Amino acid sequence: MRSIERHWERITPVSALLYPLSLLYGAVASVRRAATTPVRLPVPVIVVGNLTVGGTGKTPLTLWLAEFLMARGRTPGIVSRGYGGHGGPPRRVLPESDPLACGDEAVLLARRSGCAVWMGADRVAAARALLAGEPACDIVLSDDGLQHYRLARDIEICVVDAARGFGNGWLLPAGPLRERPSRLASVDAIVLNAGGGNARHPSTGSFPPGPARLAMTLEGRDFRNLLNPGQLAGAESFRGKRVHAVAGIGNPQRFFTHLQRLGLDFAAHPFPDHHPFVASDLVYDGSEAVVMTEKDAVKCRGFATEMHWELAVDAVPDPALGELILGKLKK
Image (cartoon, rainbow, N blue to C red; front, side, top):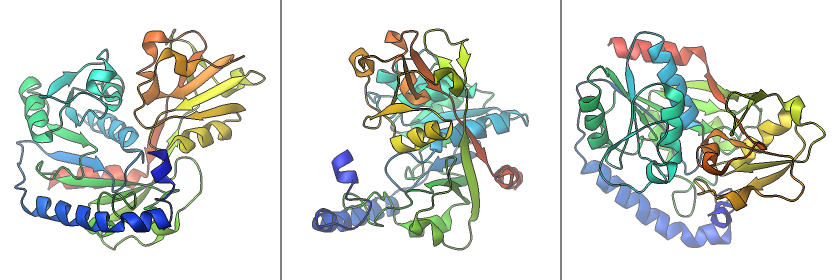
């Protein structure tokens, strides 16, 4: 996947060759959407998604939403596709669930959110199972559900990576887009994830009028030991050590850039998104510490040693997002 992604950043001979397939992809997607009858649940649904392939910060924002709503007396539940899992009928995801069976993002949501998480390729079926299993649930959060049109939604939030934007602006497979940028005109909020930096892709300067445009950063400074979760360490603990950083997420560079801002000196090891880590992936000559994302850590706990650490990050969106959500829910 990494090789084709290089051709998504700009128009190249390879992406131009694939462009006819992008036209076909767009036509099929449009027909499928037109033929879909949305199913409405008895509780409000908030969808968090994006237009592009790869990580934009959807899962951290979903975690923020869960915390935000619980702090205001709501009882949210989360549905996830369970990307990286083995599919099948809807199933409950627990903090101790196997990420290879349920998906790394779903397990991370179960561990961090404090609310019920159900996974399934069919979001409607997953949401119905969630509501049947959790009668107190009064709002459903759909992680990465923007294109799952069968699930009717009350609020749509689209997260955009500020640094990567929409790439060359073409649909899959010639570009990174699942849908055209014009789709943004119908969402309730566009959340521009700057991570912790200031880089802005040119394509992020031409959003359609209408939706709220809000900023978000990802913040995190404390590393947690995988073998001893109660042990925390700051970046200064790794200075002078031979550190290796691994990242099997949609945008590994964002993680590496975050580490650089914390002052870490390390060797970077990017892996494909949702990579099924094994113990040998974390073995490096002379290594004194291996740091990774939370999403990767859920797959590495079974073979972790005292030199393995995860960095927890939290989404910090513009406070106006919370006000927008509360206002929409009152209608």
